[in-house]
Image (cartoon, rainbow, N blue to C red; front, side, top):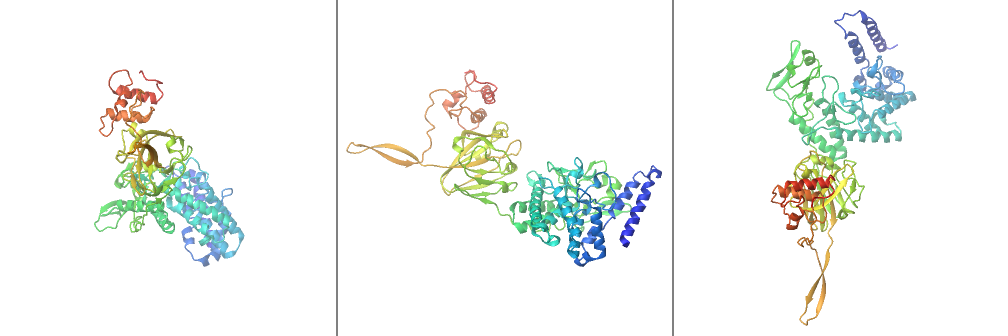
Length: 612
């Protein structure tokens, strides 16, 4: 029998003997058995040492013995391994996990020994491990920490200790049949590629955004919401430098290989965040049996392990999950027993920012749409033939349930709903020919928040509306531009309580009119001329349509908006004489807030007619 196996077996037997005496340990040491079990698991197999050995090691008796142990301890029905492979565990830790390099390490060693020996049993065991990794991936792309542990923090998507990255490295090699995985089938290579792409997208989706700016990642994220999640009692939802540094390194290289603009932007934002939160002039050093922060102007840069998400400052916690912003405030046991500071960002801050090329799109009527927005700009798109049932946004499943006839069949811009958080100009549109551009804006922006974005104030409020299946009503603005002319699509001005706008483009057809010309021979001839004319909005309205403040011929949310702005004495709008007549709804002379209230009640179907 191998010396290492004998040593390990003796150690485990010693631990088991001490555990059997647990009932006789003094009350002052209630955690002694658990501590022994943890030590046994931690010393189980030196995976990182094995994986650093050269190719010749795979054919050694030591390697073959480890591979045989991998077969012996593979969890039946799951295909993975415990984090202490040969150590008996109960509860969550009795299941397959990627914590502490488990499962991913066994898979690699099995593949290396298979290559060296040609014995099929090692390959088959490794493939069962790969199947376990596929099972550990959620539909959103994230990988859980421990299999079959729903409702616990082990079910969260984990970035801790590089577990997520270890899986992605395997999937990347499998997809291209390189490294340890040159012998996998085409089917497995294809599945690995799909798994990798989903995992990368999940990383992008999990990147924490603070005040519209992308930052870094948490140790763990909720498997359903992807929000930052707690792990152990002293590992709170936060921005985690150790795990984020590894993610950035992986994504940086992947962005260079693929030139994906969404990954480039995510990486650059994370690099900027690391630069922003660098700590200088301090050291975290041992003093006797304690650890303290001391001032040192010559100290190398440091990063806290955790940063408060909102305040962007170092965060510390104790075993009672209490929140602290000074490491001296937590217990000495936690202060000395955890890596609260480190140099995790050293390599990150020295990475050169990747070049960011703004995405450009084009259609038939839109010669060029340049998207400046960096939060969700990669989700923007152009589609033709707008119809009821089409998707509203590129990053949501919302669809249109009503559209005005003017927009049916239009070329339309699917913006991103998350772009509602943007500030500044979102995009620039250049027309291929003479067009009318329509922008559909969440009516809650003006109705509830009293906001009309500045860039829309020169546009025409059409009185048209559209509706979506998530009960959003859009009010519609329009603007005409000629061929080769450009206009700017700005921001929503707020991301709170509303969705983003969307847009549509319609060809502006030449209108045919007839004019009468009297000749010198008294003959009357009719000539046909082609001109582009604006509709006549000056013709008097002969009958009153109560509530129709903008004289559009129908009563809708646009009238409520116009009336509210009139009562607020907004100098940028004008209500015609007929519109003022139509605005008197309560039977009293003059326009008051009562008229506005009646109009809102009518639109909300609380009343079915006006008093007058």
